[in-house]
Length: 467
Ligand SMILES: [Zn+2]
Image (cartoon, protein in one colour):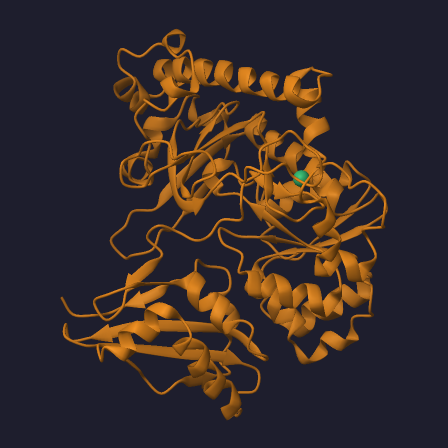
């Protein structure tokens, strides 16, 4: 395996002594779980064939199920029969489902009566005129996710461990609620905490409860690492961190790994996927997907056609086992690719590269190149003391102005602003626009205002340009 000599170099693993020389890396816990679900003892290429066969069969069943039960798909799949779908190429010829379809009328997606739905998640999309998106789950649908968490977390924590969950957990069927249930099944104590509003309090809770694993949103966990009280956390106490978001900045992962000397795992899962979808194995080299329950494709965002193997494109998924509101070929707007090289953990499961950002997540600056939140994250988060930032592009149609407000506990530091300007000018799209005179960077502002309020929502560039 080509990757093997490298993986001990991962900062977190090396420093925490988790990867011992000569020991084979633990395979992703998702593989034995999926084997059990499929009722197979096959390994290697034979297992891959079994998974592919399972996915095709479930896709055919799902197409028939939704066409029969959901008004939206009755129209969309009119004349299409599951038995007509004989290959993944046939699947790729099916029409897409878009977020707008759900916004228009989520009830047309329901395959069960409304009293069989035990949880509805309302997603407020960006933009004031956009309608909210509602996703419905039955109790069985939620159980599928609890089961994923139960198995996926085995890469992070051992029986007897304690996990602080910095995510909503106050209601039935929230991520935190399902996670607490999942951890209980592996004799791990899940401590629901919710979104962090006061970093100092969360740190006190970590110390008081002797927490050894954290689950949270990237900027929120960074907020703990960079808080003045963070030194209260004894070295080696936190043994693993799981970051969950649509996009996890590499700069934040690195900062957490360095501060706590522990591996940082990424989790990828939209509400539409059933809250959880894919998680890193111990190799920390891209996520493995719950392939018994979800089928992922990567397509060209413009043509909608499948991209060549290993190429970057838009993530599209289909649910294989959901009952309440199954989705077929749902366009996520997220960008990623399948990694072709085998994972160092040795699994036959596919490996999805960490999501690189969103298709619509950027703005054109100075009439030229695209500037994304990901570009800004990677440039700015390495700056010491930075907790979060807000970006706005304004302009009169001829010239753009980039305004940045930095959130820091110590806003008196002129150093932070100076370094931020250098970092911004290092972003190629910004550099090019500044050089042509079509973009000005306004004097950088700092704020000690409660930055946490922006921590739980999707971060984006505010575009207030005229025209
Ligand atoms: Zn792996």
